[in-house]
Amino acid sequence: MRVGQNPEKKESRKLVYKKHRIIIPVFIPKSEDDYYKESLDVFKFCIESLIRTIDTDNTAITILNNNSNYDVQCLIESYFDKKIIDKYVKYAENKGKV
Image (cartoon, rainbow, N blue to C red; front, top):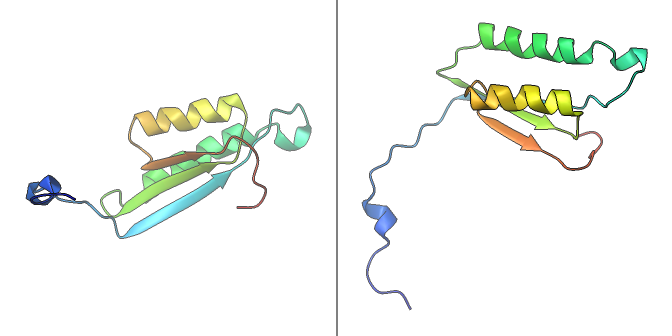
């Protein structure tokens, strides 16, 4: 049995919550097919357009990587490292429609 109080109760950290969250599921496979040819550019344009048009003080971005190719993974991780996106969820296998 524990004795005393939880030391975390004494911590006075302020939790920051945002009013809105945008969740973007993405799946771009490694393919030479014409259908996916420009998908990385479109995805990059989508993220950059979103960043320019949202209020970052009230809105957080979550990206669900549904086992996309390596280039997409690197792009998402670069946004995450720059703290442009708030959360990054990476699936090891394609889950289909999220």
